[in-house]
Amino acid sequence: LRMNIRSGFLACALLGSMTAGAADQAATTGSGYAPAVFCDTQHTRDCQAAVTPQQVLERFKKGNRRFASGHGTHRNFTQQVKDTAAGQYPLASVLSCIDSRVPAEIVFDQGIGDLFSLRVAGPVVNGDFLGSLEFAAKVIGVKSIVVMGHNHCGAVVGAIDDVKLGNLTAVLKHFDPAIAASRSELRLMPNICDSRVSGGSASPGESFSASM
Image (cartoon, rainbow, N blue to C red; front, side):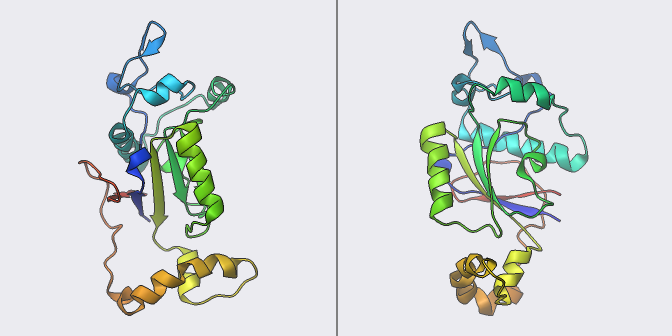
């Protein structure tokens, strides 16, 4: 199972993951933080401000490679809870599906305080989610908004099959415009999630694949 990750709002966009290299470790100079250096925990505004959206994107890619190889970062989550108790300064918002196999923090090898996670079947977006993303970007200061999908999604299949099931029916209706526009091509569409994460830069709306 692999996922397609879209950095969908690079105007406030950023992605990231903790590596063992010295370049990614926290470094303090006086009361401030060295620019372009990630903190062990996102516990201050300085930590959030010290890095760019592109650096966060590369951090996420590195984190996913560690996850896929079985060499995830060991973190003291209890300490991270204490460190972030006074405030939160996450690097990115991730909108993803509720599928139990694709938790963003684990897939990108992130810790407590690193991400704003919004999850819904699909995923689909309504005003509630847009308001939450605006809060994350304008108030909290995240630098990236990531829309993460995955293949073999039950919600997508249900929408295509026009499933009716209580409140889920209204959720699946969000897929109707895309289904109507592409129904004749669905069987011909290539699987865009078939390649592993590769290096390189991402621009607004560009996608990359994350390994599972």
